[in-house]
Length: 133
Image 1 (cartoon, rainbow, N blue to C red):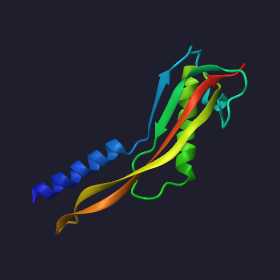
Image 2: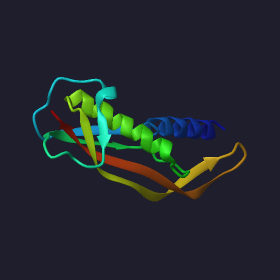
Image 3: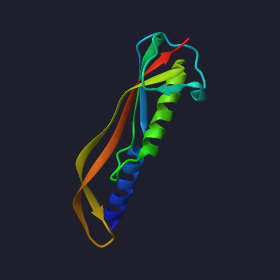
Image 4: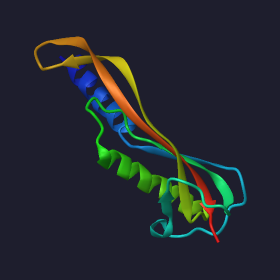
């Protein structure tokens, strides 16, 4: 009887650990003093003149449901915040896409357990953090 409870608790802990979006950066130029994320523009094309600061990327949590535009909007805000910390005042989007995988999920409903296949979808976004005079 204790095993199913432990399994449920472990599943909840693992789900909580993987549910937050992640964001990271790679500095490729000169960083600048941090700015407010509200001051960072998100653009599709780079202007003629700019200083490259780095590459910023974010990934949503893996979801078993389809991802809507609110996921993309949240990831854009994460990119802007990461770029702002590097001193960028704009992010040029370089990639936006979804990745899916099929995973085997164990379950226990209180009386019986089993396993089923689930499709997990994760959205990825990447941009170039830049400073425009």
